[in-house]
Image (tube, rainbow, N blue to C red; front, side, top):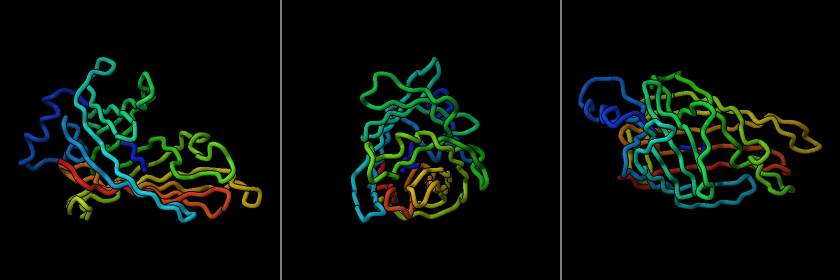
Length: 240
């Protein structure tokens, strides 16, 4: 749910540049595929299907709250209605997150380094690394059951796998989309019978020009009855 998701800028004229050039032949800017301008919002259906057969579904909304100054630099603020704030920036290297905060936290937490959402160039093979956490893996007999509490930072390698995909969602059909895949491995003691296992964490994200993220899937599976995982998906329902 990378998933998350997961998911702040230069100056206003730099952000307006992609729109001014929209009719020209050019290399797309990363902010074309991850819009940051104020007033935009997206609503997704989040579906979680666990390996033990449980299935839950809810609505998730993301809002762009506009430009702010963070650490003396222009930054763009996003908020999700599950209680997370994100601050992002964009430059000629791509779109990246610089800080985050839970609703209940008093202060934001700065990222130690640039946490890219999309890295330029937007071409097949472009890759980057960012930490993730196991969002779905849980122990059957442990409190709290979520393994992300003991493994909050697992290195994940992201790679642009395709640049011209068509994606059908509840919000409509979108063309010329990027598909990004993230792969990580969590080395985990599963149980006495299985011992230590390398568990794959796989994220797939689809970003479409002028819209942003339209679909996300996150897979975390294990065959153990002591540790359960599952799949989480985001599917775009509406956008401005």
